[in-house]
Length: 180
Image (tube, rainbow, N blue to C red; front, side, top):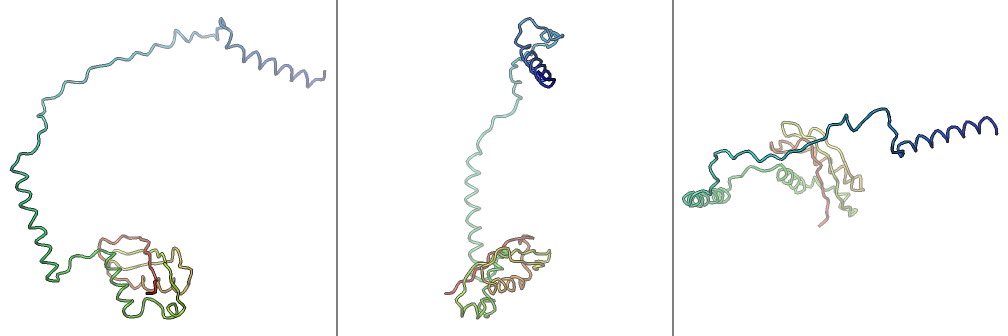
């Protein structure tokens, strides 16, 4: 045998003997593990005595009777306001929708060339709105496939001004172009 074969044989013999040592019943590893580890004990204790808290009870009958008396005036107040034409506070989506309808009725929303070509699509526009409610930045997140419609959506969205306070600071707004 060559020198390398002796080394390989020695390594295999050492590995085999180390792997078999834990299987020998009387082999002591130099420490007595059983005596150094304290046994774990668990104990179940009864729950603490309940404090003197009053039991939960349902509200008395007079309270539900007063609630229906207060509910009817609320709808009655909102209906006359609608009839008189007083405007309720608008959400930012209603404001955007109204602005786009104004642009469409003025002929500034849907480009005439796109109408002539029969182009339709939806453009997703990312809006960044400042504290004053004005669009500070806008970009096309997902185009319609028609650069003409993408540019028109950006123009329309950038003209938004004075959005309500409930408008988010960043939002992706879908702008749809549909021929009727």
